Structures are given as structure tokens and as C-alpha cells.
Image (tube, rainbow over all chains, first blue to last red; front, side):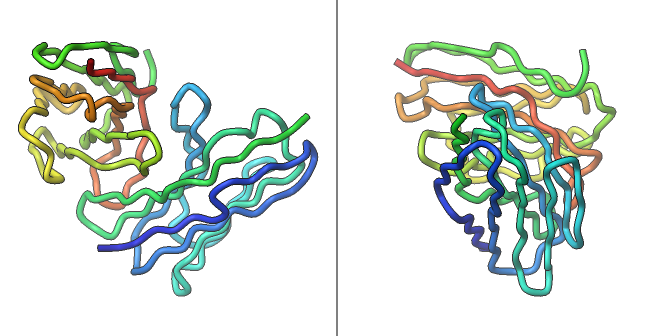
Length: 108
Length: 113
């Protein structure tokens, strides 16, 4: 089955810094989502981005489907950005495969 | 209520107990999902229902029994669980399935003693 790899696994930032999180996938996908999991476990939708580029405030994402990767950019990071960021892909049907996540900690 | 809700939020049960998790979505979606998130592991898809019909069972042990009485409600019935079943159980919904965007509930944190 499809493999989803996220990097880096852990990231520590100083407040105000920028960062890029990466999601690589091993096969063609027909959907890709980025989520932020807060400390209480809630998964918050960030982007639904099977291809192209989207921006939402300090966050933006780019998916290059032909090269099988997606990037999540966080600019001017804040302590509230801390948590785990997941990439999830679907290849058709109803199966969704999640990556292992990037654990982000933003220091004040 | 808006979005996807789950009850209870926390559950502690013994290995011989029977309990049920409930999920309700208020988004008008037709597909609902159960996921399991164990410590140090990625989210694992357990079951998918589309228009009340089960479309995916990801080799889940029979001690987990899903039920979808309508497109808005999804249950996960639990019986004779093992301590390794302790995890965060997340429910999600999407417009139909396949390539649609999924929205998640807050989860039920289950501890099996």
C-alpha cells in the first residue's frame, strides 16, 4: 500500500521563526489533507490540497502531485502553533492513510 | 451542536465490560469513519460507512463492533477489550467518501484496565 512519510519528526522553534514541514507519498493520490492536532487530541483541518497552493493567514501549503510531495509552511510561528501536524492522503475508495506526524514545539 | 461530536470524551473500562462510543455529525454528510490513535503510532482507519453501508473494515478484531443506524450517527460497541486497545478513538465524516475532505470529532480517550 501507499507509504506516507513526514519530516522532520520533531521540530523546536523560537516564537516568530518560520518553518517548512514535508509530506512525501509513494503513489498517486486523489486527496491530501493537512491537520493540526492540539494538546487535547482534536484534529483541526488546515488544508484540503490534492494539488496546487493555498494560503490561510500565516499558513500555506503546496502539493506537487506529480512529484509526490506536499509542503506546509508556517510563518511567524506562535506558541499556539505547538502540537502535531499530520498529512493524510487518499488513493481512491475510502481508505485514508496518515503520516506519523511532525511534533512542533514553539518556545516563547 | 455543530460539526462532529463524540461521547463520552473519556472512558475507563475493565476487560469484561461492554460499552459503546457514540458519534454524531451535524454537517449533512453521508460518510462516517472510525479511527484509532495509539501512543507513538499514526492514526489507523478502522471502519467506514457510506450511506449507512459499511465499505471498509480494516481487519479490526471482532471485539469492536460498529453500527451506523443513519447517516448522522455512528456507534462503536466495545466488549472484552484488552489493555492494548487503550487509545484515542476518533470519529470523522465527509460529504460522501473517497476524495472528500474529512472533519473530525474531539475523540474518546479510552483506557482498558
